Image 1 (cartoon, rainbow, N blue to C red):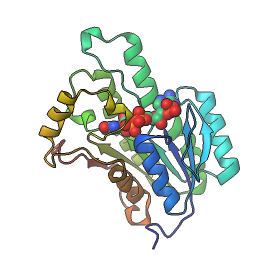
Image 2 (image 1 turned 60 degrees about the vertical axis):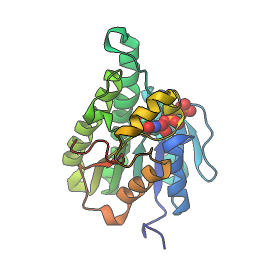
Image 3 (image 1 turned 180 degrees about the vertical axis):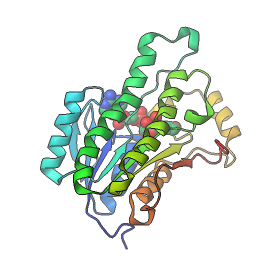
Image 4 (image 1 turned 90 degrees about the vertical axis):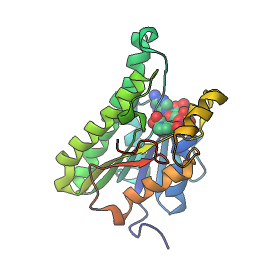
Length: 240
Ligand code: NDP
C-alpha cells in the first residue's frame, strides 16, 4: 500500500541527480508521485522530469517552476535539497567561499520556497521540506559558511511554518548526519573514521534512510508536523 494515499502529487526535488536528492526523488517516484528533478548538469532518475536550473539564478528558478507546472501542475511538495560545501578554516575562507555557499544553500532555498509558496497558497495545501545538516546546530570546524547556511534553514523553515500554516502548508527540516555521497567523498579515510567514532550508531546513513524521513514528512500521516527539525544522524547531534 502506498505510504501516501493522496498520490500522485507534483513533487519537485532540487539536486536530484545524485546522492541524497536522487534517493529522495526515487522514493517519490516509487510511491507513484509526479516527480521533477532540478540540477545544473542533468541526469535525473528514470521516471522524473529532468529540469535544468541553477538555484543561484532567480530567473532560472522561475523558468524551472513554469516548466514543472506545465508538465505536472503546481508544486505540492518541494524538497529543497541542492547544496554545496566550500570547506576551509575561517582565516583562509574567502568572500567567495562564504557567499557562494550562502547563496546556494540558504538564499537558493529562499528563492525556491518563495516560488513554491505562491502555488501552494492558491491550492491551500503543500509540504516544504528543507535539507539541512547536523552541523547546522552542532557547528563544525572548517565549515563556518556551510554551518551558517544550514542553521539559517531552521529559522527560515520555522518562520515559513508560522506564515503558511493557516493554509495547511507545512514546513519542516530534515537534518542528516554523515551520508556517503560525492559531497563526503572528499574526506580522508582518517576523517571518515573520526566521524564514525562519534556517531552512536557507528556508521554513516544511507541515502534511502534520509529519503524515508522526507517521504514521511510529505505523507498524510505527517499533516500535523510543522516547524520540526528531524534528525537522521545516527544520534550524532543528540540534544541539538
Ligand atoms: P551531492 O554533492 O552528492 O549533490 C549535490 C546536489 O546539489 C547535486 O545534485 C547538484 O547537482 C546540486 N546542486 C549543487 N549546486 C546547485 C545549484 N547551484 N543549483 C542547482 N543544483 C545544485 O550532495 P549530497 O547528496 O551529499 O547532499 C544533498 C544535500 O544534503 C545537501 O544540501 C547537503 O548539504 C545535505 N547534507 C549532506 C550530508 C552528507 O553527509 N552527504 C550530510 C548532511 C546534509 P548539479 O551539480 O548537477 O547541479
